[in-house]
Amino acid sequence: MKPITEKHLAVLRRHMVEIIDMHFDLASEEIGKDTLGPGLRQALLTVPRHLFVPQPLAAVAYQDTPLPIGFDKTVSQPFIGALMLDLLDVTPGARILEVGTGLGFQAAVMAEMGAQVYSVDVVEEFTEAAGTLLSALGYTVSIRTGDGSRGWAEHAPFDAILLTAAAAEIPEALVEQLEPGGRMVAPIGGQDIQQLSVIDKDAAGAISTRQVMPARFTQLEA
Image 1 (cartoon, rainbow, N blue to C red):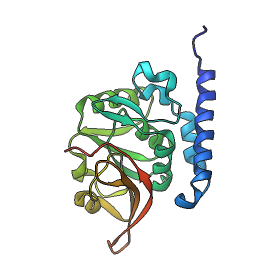
Image 2: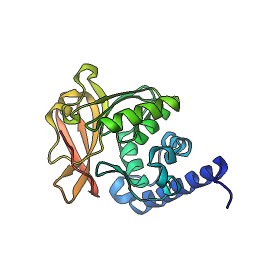
Image 3: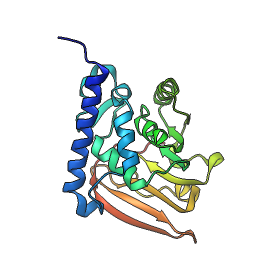
Image 4: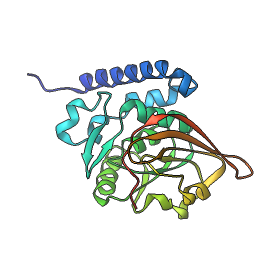
């Protein structure tokens, strides 16, 4: 059999985005819209997701399923990952804190969209691997190892915060580090199932929360 080429991989990325489109249409009532934003769509078509999973899983990287990346963690199902970024409303120049770097795929997508990304993960092996890969691909992302629930106070406030692991309740430190008028997207709930939630902070600092749909994430670790 011939080796897979960049042309083949581009076809797989397009197919992945088509499946995401289908999910958006089917869940449009819950999401509040039926299509991906154009900037996010282009980023998903550009970022080589197959490089952000363990090499033995590269051939299935574009299937709509979560994949294990080690340390009992996964990279999210493409639809869920895309939904979280769409809900976050990533814009060029936005300062975004990501809690849960993993191997760096979501950070790469946000950087591809022009955001200024700061990412924290408790697993040192993840931050080292993600930092090396993101740099090799030309993405400028600030990464550190630590307790993501405490945020990254030195670079706060943030226009948006993406929490890629489940929290029983919204971490107070993250609320404090969110810019007034900013938004956080996070799975909130217990170990078995959570609600994917949009948390908005108004100009006066008041918080409002909208639950979008049930989801299942690994738990946030300190």
